[in-house]
Image (cartoon, rainbow, N blue to C red; front, side, top):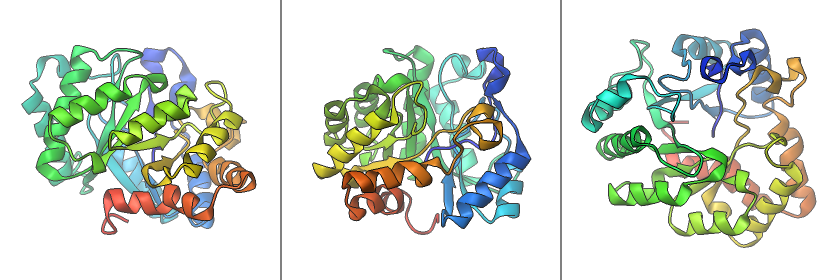
Length: 286
C-alpha cells in the first residue's frame, strides 16, 4: 500500500543511497512478490520525487504486477519550486489532469493522490497548500489520498484539514503512523475516521519490528484491523536484498508470520493486506 519502485531524493539528502534506480534488482524482487501471490502495489512516487512512469510501466509489463500510480507533491524541502508560486486551484488542476487524462502522456492514470506530506512537528505554508489542493482534487475525482507524516507527527492536524475541506475520510490513509510506536496515538487517529498505515516495516533504525509487532497485534486485538494497512516503504538501494537489505518480501516472509505467531487472527491479517485496500480503491482498480 505504500512503496517506491524508482525514487530520487539524493540531491536534497546528499546521499546517493537515496537514488533508488536499480531496475534488474527491483524486477527480481517484484517477480518474487508476484510468486508470493501479491498482485497489486501502490506506487507512491509523485511529482518531484524522481517519478519515472515508463520505468514502472516496464516493470508492470515484465512482471505482471499491477501498479496503482500516484499524483501530487511530497513535502518540503522536496517540493518543486513552482509549488510556492502556484495557487491551490492550479495545483489541484495538475493532479486532476493526471487522474483524468493520464500521467506525462503515458496512457496510465493516477489512481491515488500521494504521498502528500508534512514536516516534523509542523506544516509549512507550501505543505498546507498541497494538502488543500489534494482535498480539492480528491473531492472532484473521488480518488483516495495517502499521506506522509514525518516520524508520525502531525497526523491529527492532517485529518483536521481533510475534515475542513470535506474529504471522505473513508478514502484517506495517514502514513507512517507506526513511527511513533504509540498504539494509543494510532487509536486516536483511527477514531477520527481515516485509515492508518503501518508502512515502515523493517526500518528498525527508526523503530524495532518487535515494537511494531506489539503495536499491530494490540490494535488488532482491540478491533482496529478494519482501519489498518501494511507496507515497507522501500526508499534506498541499501533496502534491497541485492545490496544487503531486507527487501520488499520481508513483510510477508517475516512480519506477517510473526503476527500469526503472536496470535493475531487471520481475519485481521486479511483485513490489513487485502480487504481494506479493496474497500479503499474498489475492485475495479485491482
